[in-house]
Image 1 (cartoon, one colour):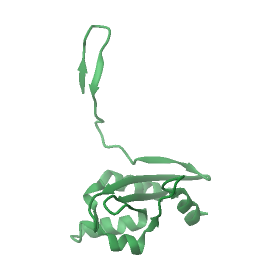
Image 2: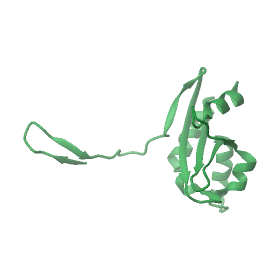
Image 3: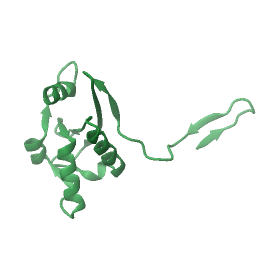
Image 4: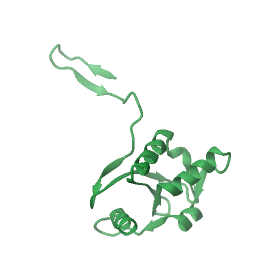
Length: 137
């Protein structure tokens, strides 16, 4: 933490960091269901590097699912402007594959086959709640 002390009574925090890793980007309740997800982006045209997801996030998402919550990854391939909703169970398969010595990324073709593409609209721009509702109604 960096703090400036211009005077005894007016300390200003200039920079601060968490000591322990956080959980995920977003969480809340929708239609009585707890949802918890991480939003990521890659400039890679053909794959999403799993190094963009952290172990503590995967562990947290796993706990959410074990408690009957809904957890997923939203991924934007920024170079090609494509968005995907990847359910946690599918993310976990790719994560476990990486830990077993396999591929360290998820191919765009795998997103096309196992995720749900979200076509951006005017409002809401990325309608992930429609997918949550459709999958978990």
